Length: 202
Image (tube, rainbow, N blue to C red; front, side, top):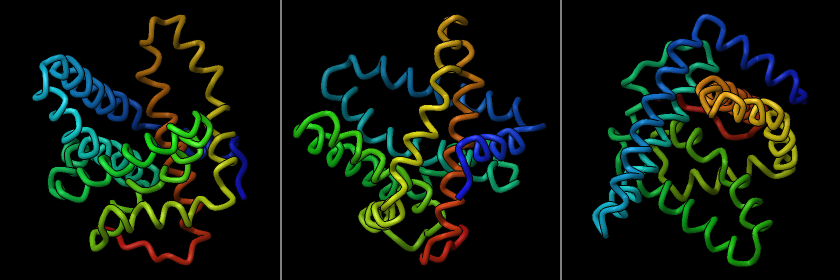
C-alpha cells in the first residue's frame, strides 16, 4: 500500500499545472460556505439553508478534487454537480451529520472514528449514480475497514503546513486545502483499486 508521502506526491503531480483552477474553485466554495454561515444567523431559515446546502456543496467539492486526481479537467459545473442529484447529496450530508453527532455523544473519539468510517461516501456516491445515501455510507464503512488509521496518519502529515498557514493569517489555506483534498482523493482511488465494488463513472 502507498505511504502517506507517496500519496502526497501523487497529489502534487495532479495539481501540477492545475493549481490556479484548484485554488480558485476552493475559494469559490469557501466564499459560498461563509455566506451560508452568515445567513445562518437568521433564525430557522438560516439553519435550514445550512442543513439543505452543506451536503450538496460538499459533494461538488469532493467530486472536483476526485476528478482532478484522475487526470480530468473539472470545471465550475463540477463544483455544483450536487444540485443535479439534490436529494441523494442532501440526504447523504444530513445522515452523515446525524450519525457522527450521535457517535460523538458517546465521547469525542467515537465521533472522530465515525467521521473516518464515512469519509468515502461522497466519492462513492459520485462514482455510482444508481445508489442512494445509505448505500454510499454502507460501502464507505466497508472500504474503511482496516484503513482508518492510514487516513488519520495521512491527515496528520499536513499539520506542519496547517501551522504555517497560521503565519499567513489563513491565506495559505487556499493552497493547503486543495493539496489535502487531492491527497484524500488519491487515497480513495487506492482504496477502490483494492475493493470488490466496481466503480461506475457518471
